[in-house]
Image (cartoon, rainbow, N blue to C red; front, side, top):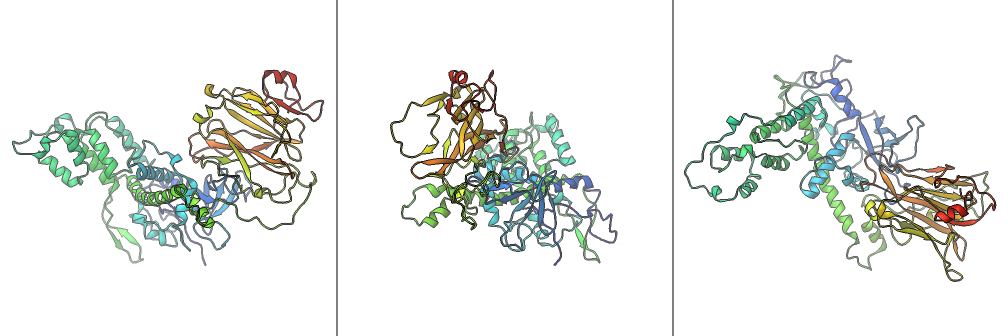
Length: 625
């Protein structure tokens, strides 16, 4: 069987156009009209991303959005890893490092499918979702409203065998999406036009922002209303405008021309802004006129661009349609494409909201007698995306310590089980590192405990300090009374937050070192270690929201086996947009308080210390790492 083309999950357009103007193979009859669209205006089609699912990703969230991707054979994509911490491991070394991902359908039943889309259209979906949830769009697209896991779960319900896109209504491309190969047929130029940055749209919006009126003031004046009984004249202007908002455009125009309205409707810019939001919500970036204009003219102009007439065609002898008559080069085809894609995204947003309501209500009024399997299904963040670990692959059990020469870090799939409850959904668990001790069972079967500092900057501002006894690294009943605990004070109200966490590792985690935004440190634990790991998220986009750890070594009192950090995006969106991947860097050099040397431990070689204040800095100078 031969290859086939594949299409965007949000718009059904291709990710490339092969010989769009029939320049390489002159015998072909299908080609775009170069007077309507230029070759450089098609380059945006190659700007794509892939939404996928990684069952081995740490934390509750399992889905990812790749970096820039390129299409390959048989519905596969070569994707740059990007900044998403959940992305699949690399399959091709770089630069840039890439991973291969299959989309929509695959011959391999064990291969997880993904969905590919044009990068610009994620903005359209974000606005469509905002409109569906709140009844209006935001001035600018807010990607943080989109939950990757929920979007993936919604899209998977629209997939099917041998599909090249989703089972969705793509408007004018509903038939093309079923074709094995994309054809550059004349008359379809609008459906591959950029909806945001085409030269026509950019020029039009720039002109619209700088003009004050569409018509001269003399043409805006209306005739005085005739002496007649008019029920609208008895209503307040605001109430009348509210009624007029929901009239069809032809009826509204006829009513205005009848001179029955007691005010001049074409000049009320606030009315037309709301009219656009109701009738053409895809035009959220149309600027509000700084002074009154003719709203009917603007509305008619945008209606003409968003709903252009379909070119008349006739079937040629070669079976390929050809346009009859002259085309209108003044049409902004990108606006028509935005309207088409908006409708497809709005349909997806309706399904997304339904999934969100079902998942969000799963925790209310639960019946204690509900079957466990049913409870897991209902309580998942997305019905299409599991959040619990599947059984690990069978492997030979290992008991005791493994040699440092053989493996510093035993294999782990890092699908966490959590003690008591799941972390908040906007929290991302960073990968943990392990010492050279290997447990008799997988690390992934040892439940994780988490300590949340705060899920937002507002919550972090409430922190006043951290306390510890400085030496205990076990959990369980104590033999005697708890000793005096040391307090590391944090000026949360003054903006002090934890910016870096370092974990010292030997056969098990030995100590934890905290550095704050005020260049202060706290050190709890044993100062001897063979390596240490630095967790330091980018401060412009993310913050440390807490730590998590597991206790799985020992019998009576469990010793700590893993320590890592929990992070969150500052916009609350889980890092959909820009930076986001937080690595644990091995053997890095940690920060120290001003005036003290960051040296390796001196005598005594191994010592349990707790450095929390200025007095401790002097007492333990040079004895922490």
